[in-house]
Length: 259
Ligand code: 48H
Image (cartoon, rainbow, N blue to C red):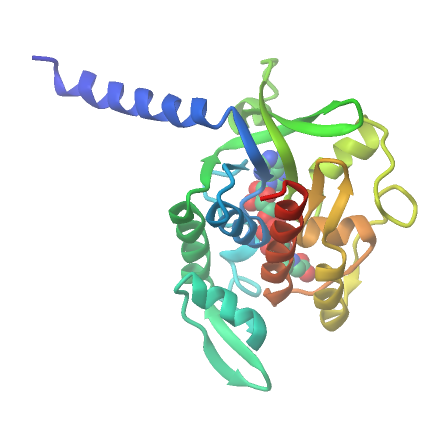
């Protein structure tokens, strides 16, 4: 009879590496488990794509947990609240077409919804680079976040993908790699990254969805990453644009992958 310690460790190691091995080649690699990435992950998984989400932090959810200035409520517009209802997340109408949402329920619900749809979330894993073959972005270069944070000189491994989504929020880290490291021209007015503008809620919400697009073969951006690339305004703790952006990018990817 094996000691319990061996059984438990063995179960974790075997099931983790089975999960990782099953996602070494995926239809879609999503970088960042923020609201736009999680909505996209769920839609793509429900449509039959294999989806791996890489989140550098221990807790997925991105900028959703803290509400507005750590008051753990956020606001969504009526038409975006319906997306949250699909995740069984409660919204409370507060008039003028807005709903409030408990940000902890929202974060937990988005994570659970994406996972239950079949997307696999690898937390504490950072995407540190991309793979480009013959003008097509076709992979994510991953490493443990603690390795990256400690600056340890450890080589990464690679996840190959048919599409990669930059859902890294304000810094648009993956598009940055494409533009500044690979030197490619992306689909923006300058071919580069314009940079996020200051606060204008209404315009920021509108353009987040408009700015959501394929930027280069195999490479897409959603949410604040899309806004940063195209020079959109920030919008603070209103989240409808993030959900709609996730939904839009999933649709674009599905069309491109003929799914
Ligand atoms: C793995 C990474 C990496 C990496 C970053 O910022 P997010 O919440 O993403 P969005 O764009 O879906 O949502 C934006 C929203 O939360 C927000 O910030 C708003 C509405 N701001 C308005 C305003 O005015 O400020 O999440 C991005 C996630 C985070 O969890 C990061 O840890 C993660 O991406 N991430 N994961 N590898 N290289 N870089």
